Length: 417
View (cartoon, rainbow, N blue to C red):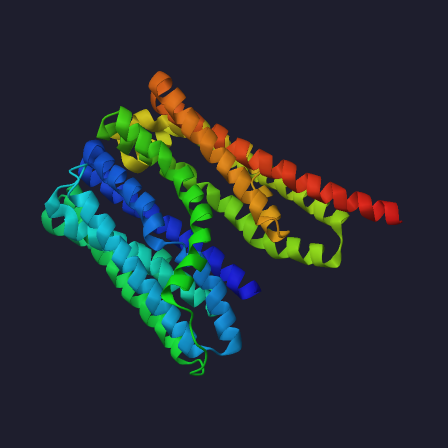
């Protein structure tokens, strides 16, 4: 477990570095308007991937783990095949519908965007199968290392050969990288399944599909919370404004590495203390973790907020300097968020995923309401405030659930004593 956690942290840092490098190349070579169009298309791609995946990335982890434990190789092979066929079928229908709808895309964009949607969706499917089969680190290679690494290399070659990029070419290159990542992920998961005994029988395709659908809800909430602001900005402003806001989001997201490092180490410890029944120690751990996260985030995010214009201009260019104000707001929001950041994790580790879903759903509803209320009045700064307030409110509700649950358990222990 320690090895998996350590390598997961390394992979996450490498992924964020590659994503930042990709954004810098695209922003500087395409300009704010074209980069904004690309960012808007990618926001819709990420939204559409959720229904295309049909909840399989989450359900596969659980079911593959059970089949691996029971040595049911035939059942695992059938499960993966049904998942791939289902995602391919729905993905093709979604890509066709979008390309011929005339919104953002032309019919000629069907091939690159279709391959991009399918590639991203199926890479997650292959990675989830690997994770369920016990290959935790390998499950992240395709989506978080291979895809962005290949994409960055392809972008570098395109810029070097042609001295420029347009959104259509960038999407096509991203599709190539996504397809290569899919091939790797599915090949590796198939190889792991081939090592299992040829036993077990799978359920019907309908039963497998119905078992995966409940996982759609949580995945939809997480993606919508992140992408809804870009979608609304795209409705209200020019594509250049989308590009400017996307650069601010990219820098703010990089600050999240600190919170990710905390959560990676915190999760197993929460389960351990719960198993031991040490709820007083668990409460102290969570309080101290949140205080430590604030202490670390305060100088980092505070520095970004103070020097937002210089930072965003240095990284992406002077054309994106208008993103300084949204970046400062998002950075301050990271400090606020650090005070409640591990609440959802704590609930999930304590066996309360339903309450996590309620809290995230509340944040999503508030996010949607705020973006429509604040963006028309305050522009990009309103978009940033909507993101900050919704994220804080949702996790504050999760913190209420979490500490109430722990307080009840500590009170019962005290009464027994």
